[in-house]
Image 1 (cartoon, rainbow, N blue to C red):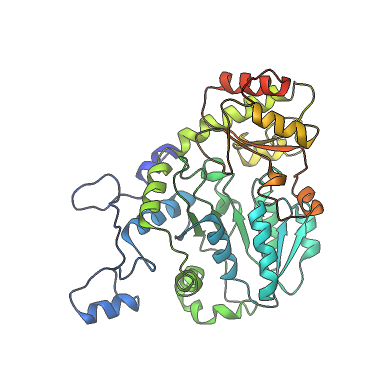
Image 2 (spheres, helix red, strand yellow):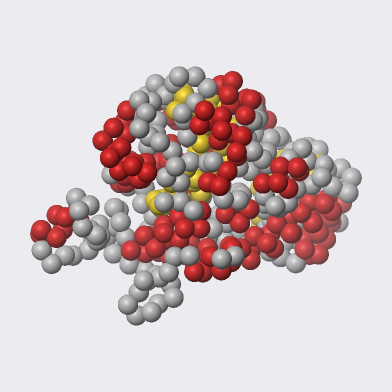
Length: 411
């Protein structure tokens, strides 16, 4: 199946009334015919649902659709993208372990990694996620590598296969945040990634109406080495060891479950992912290309020929650079003036919406990072992040050009 066909048909809805979307099971608990039946469901010895924190039919349908789309063996939906990142990593890490991560991460993820220190977990940042840089950082205590496939907002692009090869040669997994790349641009498991996470609030949902996250397991990593002793009792589950440990431990016990309604909204949004991404990527490239012809600003977009990541975008993402670009306006004051002059772009802290959104990262999503950490992430006082939407491209180009030239009047 092609991409858009697979979105609609890769995980059929099993509804006795023939519903084309999974119904919303907006309930807390599920009753059973006998105590013996509920006992078996609780012990995972019989199929069924008991409590929506542990499992829910609407959520289950969403998980199956994403797992099928990514080519994974299963998935666990979460209450947010941040809860997905947290659970995905803490399912692997314990006190004394080290994690290697790219410096060009979303500000919230950087804040999370600072919090891991109180659990005895050390995060080592590399300025650029390359095979050479990662290999130089790996020690006996390293238990995983984490990377955003397109950095948000640094827009550095990871060569997935080369990083996966380095990880596997040291017996550690690659956990890939594919939120900004989306399954439309790349299927990370095909390049060797082991675990994929998404903030489903973004491009998967597309409408800016729900907070959600999801973790997908490739089933390919071998957790049976002595490097991961916490997986001891789950090794009997074979390729399902990671998901079994996750669902029977941190994911269940910390209550990071997604609501059935949000899972439903993300399932609905998922069906138009291909159509939206085709338009968003086209708009982003056209807007970036036009803006780089204007004086007074610097444009960063990985699908521009001027980007150092242009060759990798061609080979790994089919020439598409995603939906985010950044602008450097020359000063904080000029950045604010440009943002405030835009007529169609909303000033909001999100990406992946069908509407174009702009934000000044240094004063918002990187508020808790110091200057050095911000600049490692490609965030400067004059940086503007643009999440491009599906508006008519001529309107976007005119709006941004007028804002750059100071000709818009609504600011």
